[in-house]
Length: 173
Image (tube, rainbow, N blue to C red):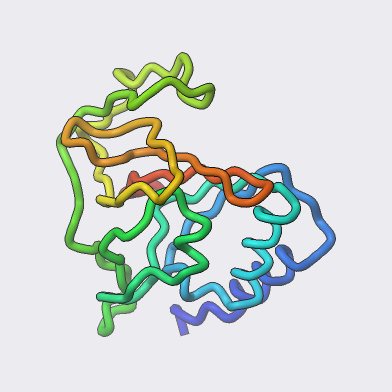
């Protein structure tokens, strides 16, 4: 079946539970956070909180229409509580949650080493769709759109740091 994710889940769990060490992990949730097995999610949380590995989350979402955000994803992500993308029950393809921000310029929300020297005017922000999130408790928003929606935020999670990006990878495969 084209939408059988068991093998992906096994590879992810094996890598996260294995002996490899990572300085930073970059992770999207192409089918939703809840599609990752419990073992993989627990191992990821432990790597960040206990081992101090960094994490970059790109447009995270729970994975089912109307689902509340699971506690482990809220604990990790610097951006939370967006309408979840969800798999279409007929086709299996991902459909966007209802709150998407488009056609807005981005601006710095404050000084931070991650954004120092980043030429925001060179990024085609008005052509980039954003999922509308809220900043997690303790998170620092680094970039926001002109409506005040967070684009990039960071937060400390145990010994590790997490950066979360709100832009959608439309057309980027």
